[in-house]
Image 1 (cartoon, rainbow, N blue to C red):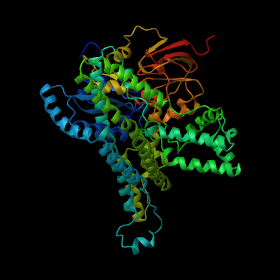
Image 2: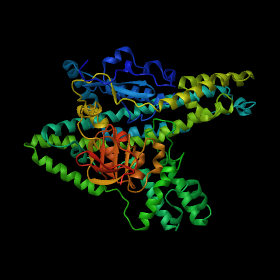
Image 3: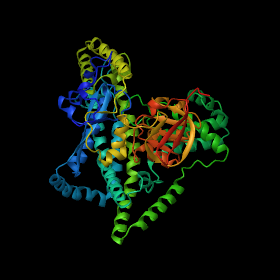
Image 4: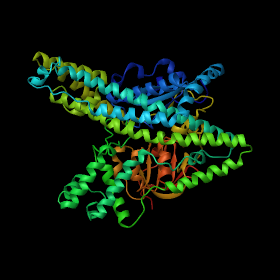
Amino acid sequence: MTERSFPLPSQLEAVPGAEGWEAMYPYFSRFQPEDDQRFWFYNSMHFPEVVPAFDGITSEIPYTAIGANTARLFSFPTTMGIEYRIVNGRVYITANPVLDEAEQGRRLGEFQERAGHYYANWDRLYVGWQQRIEALIADIESVEVPELGELDPIEVVTSGRGFASNHLLREEFHRCIDLYSKMWHHHTEFLMLGYGAYVVFFEFCKQAFPEMGDQMVARMVAGMDVTMYRPDDELKKLAALAVDLDLADLFVEGSDPAKVLAALGERGDAGARWLAALEAAKDPWFNVSVGDGFYHHHLSWADDLTIPFAALPRYVEQIAAGVDLTRPTERLAEERERIANEYRALLGSDEEQAAFDQMLGLCRQVFPYIESHKFYCEHWFTTRFFQKIRAFGQLLADRGVLLAADDVFHLRHVEVEDALADVMLAWASGGAELGARHWQPIVAERKRIVEALAGWSPPPALGPVPEALNDPAVKMLWGVTDETVQTWLGDDEDDEDTVKGYAASPGIVEGVARVLANVNDIGSIREGEVLVCPVTAPSWGPVFGKIAAAVSDIGGTMSHAAIVAREYGMPAVVGTGQATFRIRTGDRVRVDGDRGIVTIIAREGSA
């Protein structure tokens, strides 16, 4: 063990009231004795909250797919996959590096052939990916929970189908799980290759221009149109329509969406036209989660209109005042070319300039996928996935096995299958389900455990600190570097009113902080505030029109929070590690997106 160390996994103390939490997760997700010798960090980017039992599948399946693509399909030279562990309901991860140079060389040859095929045929293969993912979405949407009536419909008999409807309970539930797994394989098919292109370009720039900041590299691929911004664009269209139809007075800050919809229904043809436009926009563009698609309770706009209706009043007001709400993509594109041309001119040879152009061109080619895939995978597909699982929960509630539909998310997916088998047997035999006395106490206990675990403050990392943290992908996405670890260990000598992170998006602003611990509270953000949160999601685009700046605990210069902030042209500091602990709602802060520093100017309540 090195001198510097975070708590070892085996040293973590039990959380009072959360005894037995281990039963919520599979055995292979728990820390083992040998894990004390390895460095792990808390993946608060994707899992900022306690993971309920069913939602454990959103770490199990993604890491299965990420590692398979990285290590087994494309043979990345210096890394295998990511291992994860769950402790006290929180997900910790570590990357498995390939350290042997001979093995790196062998894998490099495989990588060049396999990844080279994708890079050379990127546009054609991307079209195929789009068709596959849309087919998967259609598949998950077609899943139906069978109705189990007194008798199966006569058509089941006359059609010669050959099986009763209770068979479909297991088959359709399996379809959900299998489709979710396949989606994640497709999700990471291009993703890791896209990040690989970033890594190569970043490393080239770091060697050629040692003084260049990460943000400057990232700005050379900014300002490109991607699907993930389409939901926000649809909201702006709805706001413009409200102004055109003289309905602006109905959209007021803090209004209840249900009351606004009811009022629109009383506004005759104009109200009907707006409501029709809303329905048209919902499918598919409101299938965006308030989170990042890893928790069942991070609802989509379609499930909960709070976020879109929190943004509409501001958009309506701005459009009525003649403000142009389009993202500054043209300005970003001009800046993109200016920066690239300036640095290209500094290179000493035609060969270096050609290599620069090739790597930058590939980064720009892969960028649309890096962002756009999120809408189809983490949002549209995953929204439908959780809706279907909730429908199975409703069947279990209707049959008396569970008390409420959402209780299904407090069972592991293998336990849900047991509960469904109980229903299949009872329906077939004419008997009664036996699950109520078995599952309902387990669900009640797990709800209590989740509540107890929510009060635990997870260490940012566990285990001995490696000699060097130099994985470029971990740095770009999570912002975990030697400097970050130094801050986590408390070695940083900055005063308590200064928080350091990555300069993710340029600019300096001052404002009142709004610390957001729960993504479902995003509707509480007010005009001109500085958003401080564990991590932002791309679906938060609408509130980026209201806030003055964004600050996050986790994330690097190519994290989604950083990319979104640059696209919306606002200052951002990411990867601070501790902003949500050091800053309180109501504090006045200065965000320096040029240097990556957040300063608390005045504490909430001070004169």
